[in-house]
Amino acid sequence: MKVKYDASADVSCSDGSTKEEWKAELLSREPEFISLWEVEGPRLVATTESISGKDFPSQEITARLTLCNLPSESFPEAGRVTINMRYALRSFTPEPVSMRYKVNTLFHELLHIFLQRHPIANSALKEVIAVDSMLPGGYYKRAWELVNATDTEYVKYVTELSK
Image 1 (cartoon, rainbow, N blue to C red):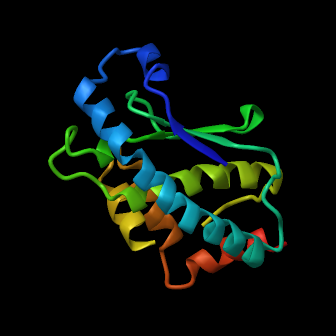
Image 2 (image 1 turned 120 degrees about the vertical axis):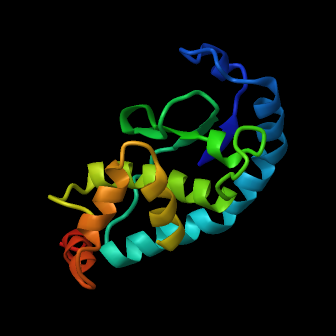
Image 3 (image 1 turned 90 degrees about the horizontal axis):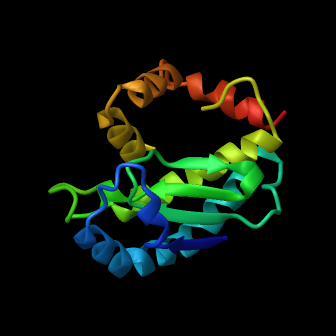
């Protein structure tokens, strides 16, 4: 897994709204993100493989940190994910999300790649749910409500992963 911020790639943002202070802060915090990922990422991947009995794809993945006004996304065919880092920066928002949350976002995007390789009909963390529930549009809030409808609702999604 390669994790990087490439300020020159953000020049192509369609809205041209990235600011120099965001870039400077992200560049200064990039090592923090990478260090967290190097500790947490392998554990998250190993736990997923252990629970599901299935391996993550072995292809090399590049995680591009971005300041463009785009959602975090996965591009399995290209072996790449993008992680929107705006909301983790004090220069962007007075109450930034934790870097750990953004590491979880990277893992979330990797799960899309995992689930593309191991498709299931449906799929099933307190900080993640809290932050997702505040995002515009309410889509993630509603998704978490569905998954957490009962104390055991999530179990059927985890069970599907192990089939």
